[in-house]
Length: 195
Image 1 (spheres, rainbow, N blue to C red):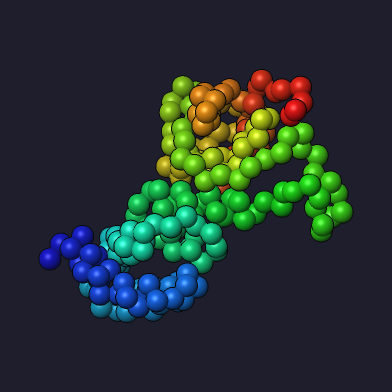
Image 2: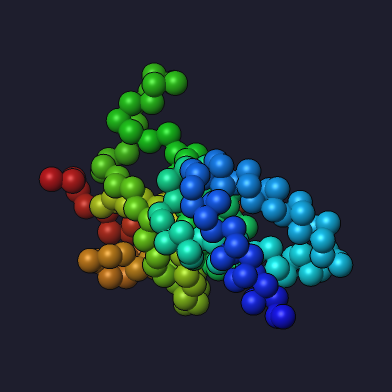
């Protein structure tokens, strides 16, 4: 039996137990399953090939719902499917955000000129003319936060990029911050005001 077939068979076997609980429960059950797989498989290499395929098969059988909590992001992060991994990175990126009109912890007002709307949309970014897949995390008239695929080297602050924006096409911008989970882009063509 191939690794792919084994992953599918395991997903079929465990689906009912995993479907009957929330993402925290699924994460716990998957931890137990993975511990048993490590013990049963002949090598770590076999485990490393099987595990992400099994997780991907489970997520697909559950309908690949949008990530909306930390446990779900952790599960998605184990998948071999890049769009699952991207969704996990996008959630982590958003979860670290303390946006809003008023930051209660610091008592400071948000100084952004334009309201942002949260997204989780696949897109493309052009870095030095090279197109790479990314996910738009949030968007305003003045800029965007973007999760860049782990397979890409993220652009550094100060670099000029072009970002594919829904309904607006390609927009040029400057990277204003970069972290391990994404970048912030300020669009070059800043409108004078939002209204």
